[in-house]
Image (cartoon, rainbow, N blue to C red; front, side, top):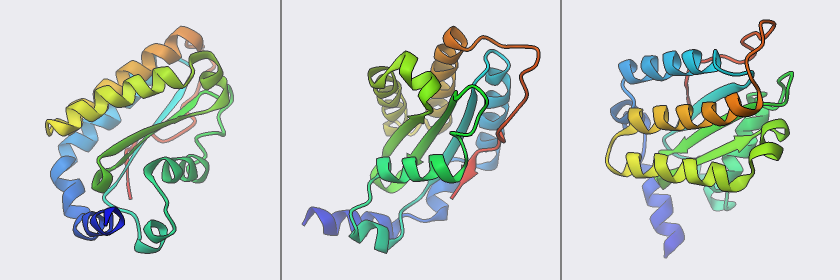
Length: 166
């Protein structure tokens, strides 16, 4: 029964769901926040949001974490000079946020820190504060990156700051 409920949620979640949660002004604000925060550290941030998963992926049992890891590779978040890339992934149909961090920052911070940030973001999302939830997450992740990867004059923007809507 649980699978059927999940399938139904994914069937009714569409691009309008994303647009309601993240209108163009919110996406621009998130882009600007990522750009401003990246000046504080030597890390790279990406934000991706997806309304739902394709039915075949659901049937095979893919979850938000698996999709986030898949996108981490596809978007080349792992391919930064200091191994300090971080992906924030939101799957609206499942109301799940996942953070996938490259080995350089993950080895210094650990899973508990990422889970705490995800929890704060999910609470904001549950209240319908999507833009605020993402900016909270970006700021919290940037605090961790700044502590372990201080900015360097030679740093360059290695990944796009633009939120990815899938």
